[in-house]
Every structure is written in structure tokens, then in C-alpha cells.
Length: 171
Image (cartoon, rainbow, N blue to C red; front, side, top):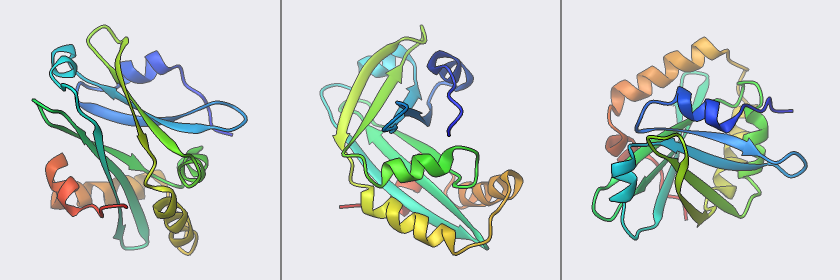
């Protein structure tokens, strides 16, 4: 069972321009993306939709999984969320992503209140099912090993735009 953290506390821990994911619901949990951003940027996103990509980046015996999304009509913003299957509770998130129909993206502004929500069809079901199969063939890794592997990915693709370009386009 995933340990639930208060959404406001999660948002406060994020820097502006950062995103994370969480599981919402007890019986049929759904992944939701939480984004902290400046209110002015949220306002200038305009009438737009969310574009999403995913990537599974092998680093030795560690599979670093990323979901990258971008949004914005007037001001385009990219966000990366990192998925560590072996972090407590994250396996449940992988399983949810493999079955849920829709994704929600909640943008929180300067006041730590939700200012905007986008909903998109979930194109990641097959990707996450395959990612689970791939990860289960690897030995389990610890949090430090994952962070080192993630740093290597970030060194190779230092900006969210470069991560976007490197990630697989999911149908």
C-alpha cells in the first residue's frame, strides 16, 4: 500500500517548475501529476492540451523510467517526472499507469492552490506494462543507485526539452 502524503505538503516540497506524481484513491488508485508553477506562467499556458512522452533509460542494471509532458500555447513548458519502481509504493503507480484510462495534471500556483487541471487520454498503458516486465527481469536496486543512474541520464539530457527529444513517442 502506498503511503499517502497530503497534497499541499507535496506541493510545498516542490520548487517552481517541478512536477511529481501521486496515487489518488484507495480501492482503484489513479496516478495524478502535480505541478508547482508560478501563477503567471499557469495563466499564460493558454487554451492548449498536454503532450506526453515516456522513456525507459537503462543504466547498467537499473531502469530509469521518466514521464515527460509539455503544455503551453504562448509559453511552452516541459516537465519531467522520475519513476523508481523499487521505491516504496511506486510499483503500485506503475500498475495503475498500465490500466488507467485518463491522466490528470494539476497545476498549483503561488498560493499552493490548484489553479488549472488538464486531462488527457493515457497513452502509457502498454509502455508501463512493458516497463514492469523489463524491470522484473533486473535485480532490485536501492534508492542511491537509482539517483546515481538518474544523474547520469540528466547529464546526458540536461534540459526537459532534451529529455523530451530523447523519450519514446507513445501512441
